[in-house]
Image 1 (cartoon, rainbow, N blue to C red):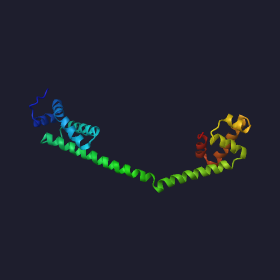
Image 2: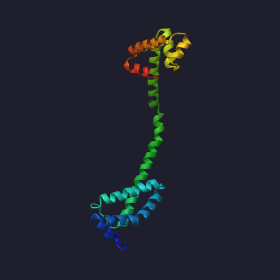
Image 3: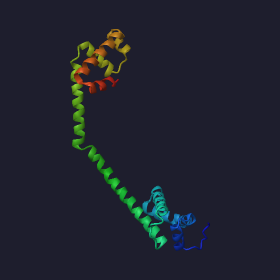
Image 4: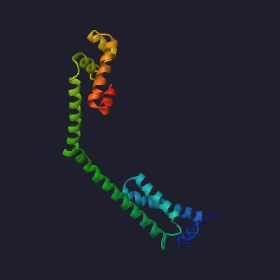
Length: 191
């Protein structure tokens, strides 16, 4: 059923409550532009204004049988105002949290604790690497720290690639026993 322009807002509300899609469409057609302009003037953001209007019309349809509307235009403008205030409050809260985030991240406790644990772990690993036999340690460090291939290490040290593999395999076995499985996996996959 098509709605004629002459139908009153009160009649539209009654038909809307009965689930009349054409009444809903007519309300949308009559009010979408002025409500959007109203929301956009307050929010200064077309996307946010569009979201406010979309939410308003969604709620209008889904809660049509429970919403109490005495004046359609007053209801719609009040609903837009309330949603705009919600968006503004959300923006302010997000801005406050965003302003405090750098302070939290750079706070003594957060960074100091993280760096202290990281330094502690690195020191433990390096201590165990330093305890390896000299040739094994040299091969292992060239592999893991200098990121050289087995062939490059063999050329540099004048040994075979098989010896390089053997030194790395033995170093990993020793470190796994001393450092435990977790740290061993870190060292294994650090290449």
